[in-house]
Amino acid sequence: MVNGTAKPPGLAFSRETFAKLTPAPFLHAHLQQPEPIRPNGRSLDAFSTPTIHTGSLSHSNGSAVVRLGDTAVVCGVRAEILLASDIPHPPGDDISEDDLVERLGLLVPNVELSTGCSPDHLPGSPPSTVAQALSYRILSLLHTSNLIKPGDLRIQYTEPATEDDLPDEGPKIVMKAFWALYIDVLCIALDGNPFDAAWAAVISALKSTRLPRAWWDPDREMIMCSPLAAETHGLRLDDIPVASTFAVFGTGSALKQRSEAESWVLADPDGFEEDVCNETVTAVVRSDGGGVGSVTRLEKSGGGAIGKAAMGRCSHMAQQRWREWQGVLHGG
Amino acid sequence: MPLDTSTYALAHLRLDGRRWSELRRIHGQISTQAAADGSAYFEQGNTKILCTVTGPQEPKRGVEVEMNVAAFSGMDRKKRARGDKRVQEMQYTIASAFQSTIFTHLYPHSTITLNLHVLSQDGSLLACALNAATLALIDAGMPMSDYVSACTVASAPSSDQTLDEQDPLLDLNGLEEQELPFLTVGTSGEEGKVLVLLMETRVQVARLEAMVSVGLDGCRQIRGILDGVVREHGRKVLESRVS
Image (cartoon, rainbow over all chains, first blue to last red; front, side):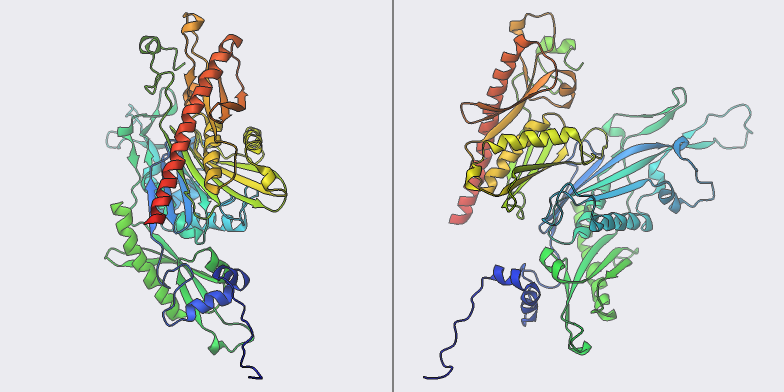
């Protein structure tokens, strides 16, 4: 009964204390189990189920409220008229349709994170780099996916035939104005993965957007809009791309052999996991005509823990996520 | 002027079909966000406000209010500058109203932060913000002396009728606020102690008393609605605990 049989009393921390003091080993302990499970109770590949409500804001042309786990985001789309006469350097006829939206800047997304949605984003501060990066990523995804057709945003005027026109010339169609869509995304609560939630809100709000019927009045020399709800038209959005973000938790460090490092891919990270992981992968999938989606965009940043095989798994999971979203977007 | 049409004199119905003493459709929900200490969502007609409470936190600043007006909330898309004076004044009014209601002596050296998100504006902005903030503070479990309930009242539209026959209008929407002189009144408690009274337009002094008394009655009705929302939430929580 002399040495070492009585064990020294162990330190008994609650889960929350352990998570606060040593977040990385806390997550590692969860993932090392034979049935790995994350601290929020989800499995490694499980995404959170989104809840979407559209059309709740009365002053916007389109709106959506999206909840993805504990992250909640509100998006409002306002349409304003951009007169062709106000464009300083109008594009020539040689510009392709796909570039028109980008050239004229007809889509203006803005992600507002400084709303008090999390302790890191207190209101009153200028947009942080995270917010600016999110706005830019959404803008570039809108442009490269050609989601909005320029035809939906044009306000044309067919000039009546005059005596000078040759008989076999068709009626002259003049571009009088364009609709510019201001897409404002307001983050109400942030618990990780703002990009997926913001993108989901943007596509849901655009789907629910109704633009009034507008025409050029030659006598008053201005654009007139019809106030009737029955004369509004929506945007033609085929092939809606769906974004899925993954975080990679790795145990590699400069002090270890590369072969000793382990890594796990966590789908749809929450706030705690985002703080602990350095690497993120975002895959955007849209349909390719068949039932299987194709990857249109792949973004990766952070570390070097995952290789081709893991990226392949991520795109596969993103395709599955795209299939789930088809049901939500077209059914709900 | 939306109310100066002959239809008001005929049927005494406003543009949205309400009578002078009717409130708009009011809907409130508490505990809408799990992450915040207290949260609430409040709608008065088309004015929709979300409020979250965080605190008490370290530096001592009493009650702090931050109001974010979303760019898509009003009739025109307008991105508010950070130093917008109208928003700052509303923030100050709300903060001082709650400074006297919350038992801040129980939290010395600490700050209680209220974040208001205005999602849609259609009149009665300050009143709706006060109501949303009350619900959020109750959800956070802040000890307060009583509910703070607020509403707007407008003086009756001018016409040839005598002063006695004109009823002040309760709970204004955006169009009515632009056209009529109105005031916002916020009260605390069943007996209606006035905490906030804000009037920025000109009105005849003789009509003021009638407006304030109609406002106090409107606040009493809203207090009943807020109480109902809190009790309903409490009942649901208890039921889920028991089962």
